[in-house]
Length: 284
Picture (cartoon, rainbow, N blue to C red):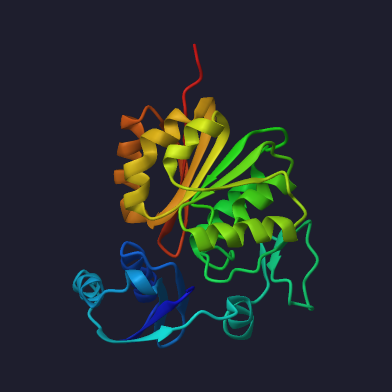
């Protein structure tokens, strides 16, 4: 069954920083999707991964001076597209060049790149700062004819934009089977069947390497564990774009990248979320 637990956290006082940090802490515990509002945050995790102890541990690490009230309920499998459309997902425009919307939306702004995402429960509609940070960077990068691999592809949104901008070949890797199925559906919706969507983890990289660009919008701990695998999958001179962590974590991530033989190039941020760019040195 495609069942989830919906964890509701009401925060007093509430702020964007508070809900962002709660999403980060819950992401470490396996939560996939987050819907902030003016009162707090609703977070979703697969039913088999739900744990009261994990929730208590996440809240114990929450440093804000605030009162957090938690409640949870089982949400049985349903039409998640309809759920997102009805409650959460609205069309957005990224960097004035890329519009992201669902197949159900009718009032969609015109943009150079039009991406259709029916997200179900997979992460990545462009609304979160980490996704939009990488989308913005991809819009500025030369991608024509370059091989791109998107780790933790979620909805497939980053891989889809890369293909739209001429990258080839393009592959996405997703460990969660339901998210992988959703990414495959979104690839078809956007008429890019050439994108290879693979279900698994970083061990799949060796079979599809080398890449000119590797993307990973995943939580910090996964990045730290897998960064050597990312580096091994990159051609000399290739670029690695990382997000899914806070600006406070940049030094830790960059130190791990240097240990893997990668050179920091720069970073961008939004609402305390970071996007770090790294490069594999060219052969001398």
